[in-house]
Amino acid sequence: MSKHTKGEWEKKVHSWSDISVYAGEKLICTNSIREDATEDSELELTIENEANMDLIAAAPVMYEALKKLSCLGNGDHLGNSDGNRIAQRAIESFKE
Image 1 (cartoon, rainbow, N blue to C red):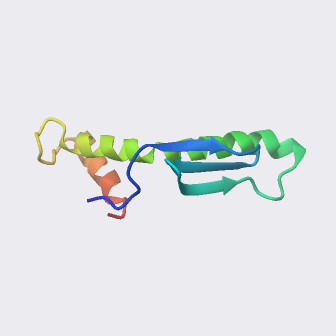
Image 2: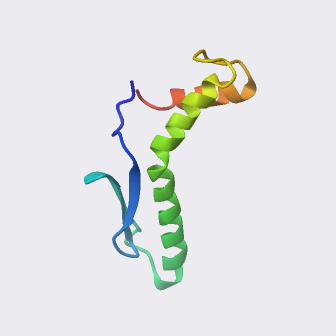
């Protein structure tokens, strides 16, 4: 059984420099652009920060997809195709 916070995770942008991910009202994480950001680097860092938080927000859905992919074509049993094994290795990286 997974120990992560259940439910849909959603990214919320607070400002150009601060973004959080929530599951309902529960804060999952917050990320801020570095203090040394300049006007020249602000746009690039904002785009990178948002993309990183999109990945974090998608983690529960990706985890469920990996669990299904690890058994694809084998019912409830782990498969032995390259795709099955890649999904299995990715699941093992989660700390359950």
